[in-house]
Image (cartoon, rainbow, N blue to C red; front, side):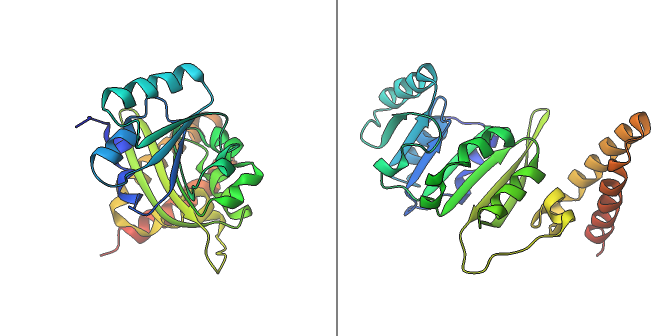
Length: 220
């Protein structure tokens, strides 16, 4: 059984047996191998724009004898998904700008479920998703060394949700879960440190929002 990081393993709970998945930016295809070995799925497409990175994935796929289960695709983002039977997209370990660039394709209309993992600019990512008629169903804070990632699962629904500025900034799901209390306390401290050094007034509103979130999550 292949070993993967907790960051990658955190994504597995969002994958279901009947999902038809393409993993974009698959790198070494570690997550995809784990998903197949675990019996979570039987088939998955893996895509990377970098031929060397994709070759690394192919070598691992062959090493674990999964060439019939994991299909490599050389290409950028979701430009080739119309050639395959897919409805679910995984993009992990990238910044939100790169994720948004990948999703800024007409082919996004073919995707019904997105499993995304970013370590920055989550406000912009949430804004982009809702601008494309996608609702946010699940969010999760994932610590990986010195980096903090946010898992966002989004998809299509009959009713388009609207979010407040506070929800766009800090997550409509995250701000309602008290297990994220320490995360928001740490985030507030970092914003305060930056504010005291720079006196950036745009941070005052964020700090005020965080005070509200922390107070609400601290209630019994």
